[in-house]
Length: 117
Image (spheres, rainbow, N blue to C red):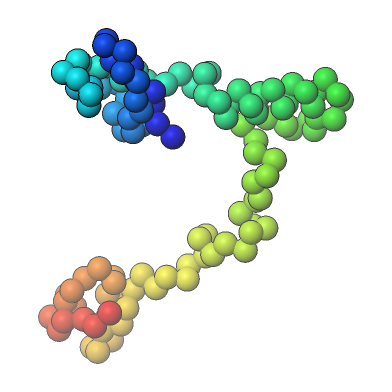
């Protein structure tokens, strides 16, 4: 998704979101452009979600906890089988001397031996 920009000479192009609120040069001419910060209310996704909720409420099918920001296609993390919340990654490894060392250390602080990861 990019931000649409129009230079003073009429050239239209898109720039990355990271350039919001900054100034730059038009890639087609020497004109200077100002990249505006997109308004959250004018967002297409937000508008689409608001219209869906309004239609559902008008039809009487809206759940009492429905929100404009809810995505009906999105599943809950617990139902997806994701392992992000579990501690699958070992954060500590054991040195030969028996000391538990964080995995980002290159040497054991107790004995000074280099660790193998």
